[in-house]
Length: 406
Image 1 (cartoon, rainbow, N blue to C red):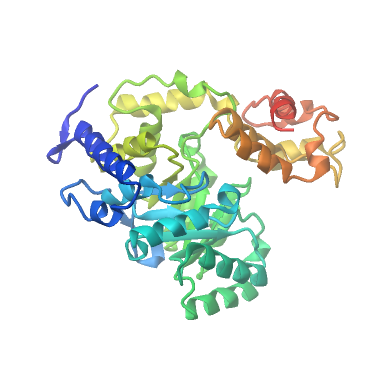
Image 2 (cartoon, rainbow, N blue to C red; image 1 turned 90 degrees about the vertical axis):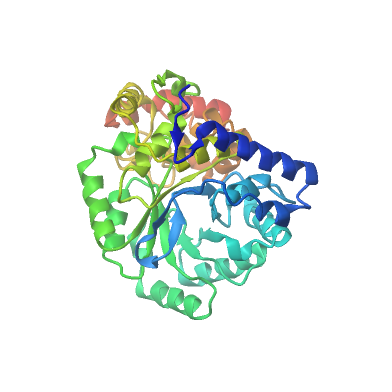
């Protein structure tokens, strides 16, 4: 593999330095965290960009917390800090509710609160519930404030109302949150981005964005509007993972970067995007992503071409979460009100199971769906398959979900 020098440091050296840091942390069990975190100032730093109207610079690579962290001391967090990865994306529900407490344990043990940007999210979208979640999150994190608080997976525009605006303003006055926004990965991402552009008190949005959506004119127009309005844009689900376990192996590496690194670098090439969040559940994945982030070279035309080839090759394997097509097609076919299957959510959980290997998490999430939405074997999903604009075999995938998630 090519190991060209970039700004005086090689990709191999980035990985070696990362390995040295993690080895030291593991050997000391985190006891020497403060010393390790203060060492080796010559390490290459992840580039930073301004997060919209917050006016604050954050790294282009963010640490996703959905998979949780070690409950005593997570070396991935410490190693990330050495390279400037000081932004952690948490939520009240991540890792069965343990994400925030584990992150809080790290902050305390490493005395790292003033070194890190902490974002958390609320599954409660009403004003009172949102305020309550903020207090609960602060208690779990062991801090007096979070840098950014999101409404988690917002899909209903009605929640961005004057009552919530007043609650957000009050929480800011109390010093509990510094900035506000929302995450969204439902079928109406375009609508939600336009809404953010028209809502002055929304400072940032984290949304589903990957290489299969680059040519989507409606999405690009919505991104343009939000960016022009000063809304900080954070990309999530950038890997564009498919329901088929080993589909990623069809990516033909014709340069220095793996599929996982290449798609991150492709997202970062979009000047509208401030950062991309990644669930790096191992030190190796963390080091690989850091190597891609600190390298300042652009993807070659051949590498960009392979991303597009791969996108076309796997298009029918990836659900876009657009329930407005497949869900609507099921009405009158056993998917009546009160018994409507939640196809997009179910396929997302199936992807967690098949692609990420997170069996327990996938089943845990599936179990939270209403009982009628989990009774999949009774339905014929042929209409949903025919309605999918991308040719996804919804029927086959939902049958697999019956087998592995129920």
